[in-house]
Amino acid sequence: TQAPPVYSINVDALRRGVPIPSYLEDLGQAILEAVEGIGASVNGQALAQALPPQFRLDEVVREQGSVLRIQVTEALPPVPEVLSVSHPDGKFKNGEPYQVTSAISLAAPVQLRGSGEDYPAWVWQRYTQLPDSLPQRVRDLTAAVSRDAKTPYDKAKAVERFLQNNYDYNLRVDPPPYNADGVEHFLFTLKEGYSEYFASTMSVMLRTVDVPARLAVGYTTGTRVEGRDVFAVTDSNNHAWVEVYFPNFGWVPFEPTPGESLPGAYQPDSERRSLLTGNLTDASALDDGCFDDFDDFEDCGDEAPTLPVGGAAAGRGQTNPVLELWPWALLALGAAVVLYGLARLLWNRFMAVSTSTRIMFNRLSTLATLAAAGPVEFQTPYQFGRRLEEVLPGQGQSVSVIVGAYVRTRYGKKRPTASERRMMSLAWRSVRLRMLWAAVKRRTT
Image (cartoon, helix red, strand yellow):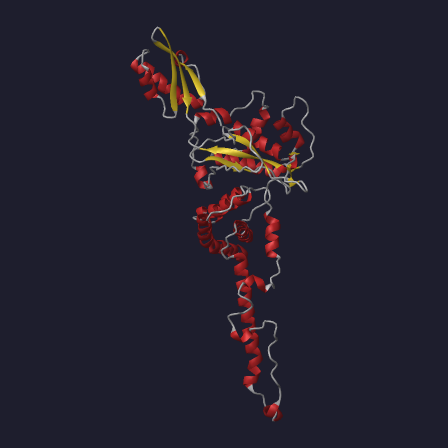
């Protein structure tokens, strides 16, 4: 886990107005007010009480009773932001299970835009640092890209879109020349690369405009070795993305990488295609059989009976209006039955509640696609969820429940509990008709 950051503050330098990092200005001001207000011989208890609440007093160095230097430790959030899995014996045994619980922000874009810039000192110190050698034109380009962005969230979205729209995804690229800056080389010379190029570039660009960002890398399970309980995980199984820190919400992922063959990205298009092009004449999807509610149509394969033409009326050259209406009546009834069956089939396939997180997510993706808000291949499920929250105001919680359940099942290999299945069922009932209406409006306007 990350060690809490420790800061050493020179009180004499504070008195002389020597600049300190902006993220420590409140701390420096509190120390200076305590020392100047109470006197240089201020005791440790008074100093500790004067510090901002996230700082703990560790040590006070004095000379002839006067305070020279103060050492403090900043408290980290209750949920550590960096975790590792370790074992008391030093290693895990084959088949030994372990469980990791992650805290994932479900904040909507409107919340992230309003989160402000009051970053903790540990975030500012660690996640905005940049090398002095960073070329100036990287800073200038970022300033131009984010010129119209008013909030850190909008800056992140601007840089994300810029990289997606102006650079190509390519797994086969040459490394930067010796002594070249990798970000500058990617932005101005190479202009193509794989996920690590895009993610590291976005992280650096955001830091140049004072937005705390970090690079995240993950791996899929790889390919199972035939005949063995072993998986081969290669570089093609990894994927990198960006996480941006927002006060009160924590780390939120962003995906700057375009392309179709991203390791670790879910593939909604192929799944939706299988749903949309499935055999719609397969009556097994109706569960209750074909037209069970209609006693007169027990066998769906039977043709409508053929009415005889002729008889006494025909022999007299007259037409019976009742006989003329029968074929039309049967045709109308048959059409109604077929429409009912088709509607029921489509409802069961696309709208009904399911206990499968994958099916629920696929149905959400399908309706979202019809409403022109479907997931794209470079998005993570959470990014798709945030996009959908913008299309469905007031349904953010329901969307988050479905997306979160899907992610935990697919990537965490965690079966949903009975309580989670109930929540997912309620969430789908809440969102499905609104999603369908959004799709209908999109198709009719």
